[in-house]
Length: 231
Image (cartoon, rainbow, N blue to C red):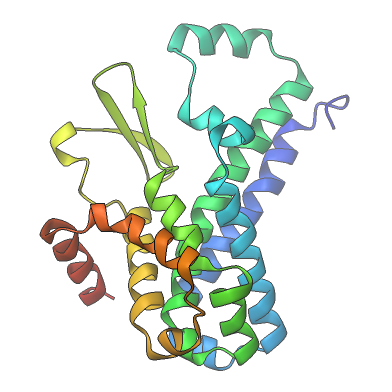
């Protein structure tokens, strides 16, 4: 594709995956969809979400896609790089950007799978709770948020509506949609009766969950309550 210069076609192909993930997330808003979903399809969706969330939770040193987002070039460096890159490098950059955006979109899909977990089959529930352990993945995403980055010394940005936007320091604790989805999933995985019954809590998992304790305050609780009401 690089030799033929089909870069735009390649970008459109990758964009289809992101669009489909977002569309399925919208469909999953209704509990009836989970109730009527084929068991194998549910497991496939859960596995897909797990892969994408693990990708987001992978440390930046081992994640070139996340590193590209969290450590962007300056305007002058970016202009120089774009002018000098070849077709293969442009395709690789498009792939890295697409992987990040698709993985971010997957968080909303995962949220509805967790919210409607009681409607899933036993295999689907076990996949979320024990095979992939969504709760521990979420703890890493909250602790090292892939949708927040710091530029220079006093400039903070968050990934909002598929683009990085500057956020005032005193607004950093205000949830974006992606941050809210993570906390809503934590709420459902900790409080839903079926999760409390079937989640095999051991010492390691308990220690990991307690990492969230430093974030628990009335401001966080208030935002989670508002997001849970507006469904």
